[in-house]
Length: 149
Image 1 (cartoon, rainbow, N blue to C red):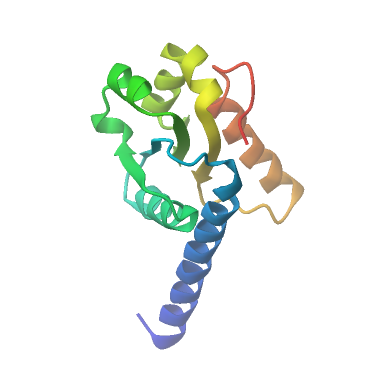
Image 2 (cartoon, one colour; image 1 turned 180 degrees about the vertical axis):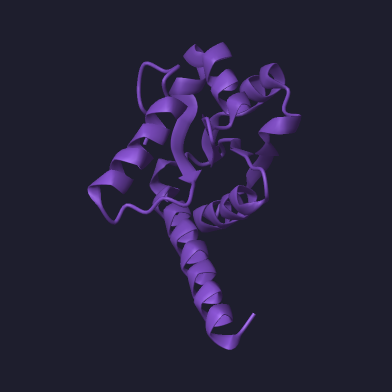
């Protein structure tokens, strides 16, 4: 990797981490003191986990990071008061187990979700990119009656 490529990649990574941290900071007013919070994420290569860590750090709260791959749905839904959800995007959309969690625990989950995020390579710089991102979120929240922030 040459110097220019390294600096370009490093700059993008820094911007992503700062943006995720700021997103976490913006959630502070929605978090009740004393509530037990879980950030549930689905990742393939680790970028969504990294983003989840940055979001959690930005909140300034104790947040449990839970990988959807190893989750017991029943126990998790009962144990936590508040949820933040994050998913990477695969060819067929958001992580299937996250969608399954929302489908099987719709009534409980939709009242407890304060925020969500999606990690993908699509930018919102043009209308086509914005529509694609909105489509990812629509598929993510299709099982719910409401669309969380």
